[in-house]
Length: 181
Ligand code: 5GP
Image 1 (cartoon, rainbow, N blue to C red):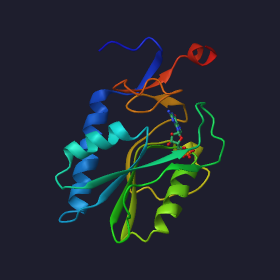
Image 2 (cartoon, rainbow, N blue to C red; image 1 turned 90 degrees about the horizontal axis):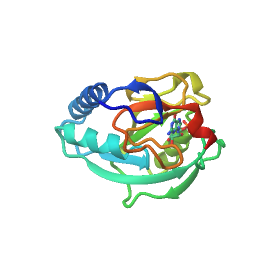
Image 3 (tube, rainbow, N blue to C red; image 1 turned 45 degrees about the vertical axis):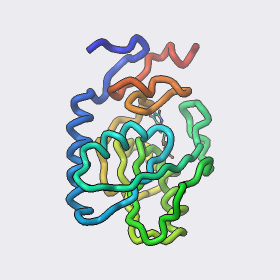
């Protein structure tokens, strides 16, 4: 496989991701057997993860989308989380699983968890592909975790830098020079 010219280092290969996403999907399918959970995908970074997860599932979940903003196109968080797009449907009485690409400080997921809990779902769990455990500022319960990764800014598999690199099929770290452009 040819490496994207802006990528310095591959953290997780396509194959590794596929294998782990399949395991997560199987685990969730087992845990929610006979149920119809709502997968709440956090825009935009988690859409590729969501679609792969869905395809490996043996149950029939519903999906919905929620949009939050905290990064404003840079690699540093402002610490402020805002809801920029709400779910289409109510989640009252539903089994909800938040599907997120990455947990860093935990502020985004904490905000989402609190927000969704006020709507009284029957249950609420969190599924993340990547976890930067070292960067955590608030403790948030992660029920399904793909990988623990080092505290580096990563792109690919849906994750962007300034809206770019989402289409790279693996997870990687950008070359320093990209940030200087
Ligand atoms: P937290 O609120 O946990 O600090 O950050 C969560 C959000 O920050 C994620 O949804 C994601 O949008 C963004 N984020 C955190 N780390 C990274 C990273 O390494 N790469 C990219 N592309 N986004 C990140």
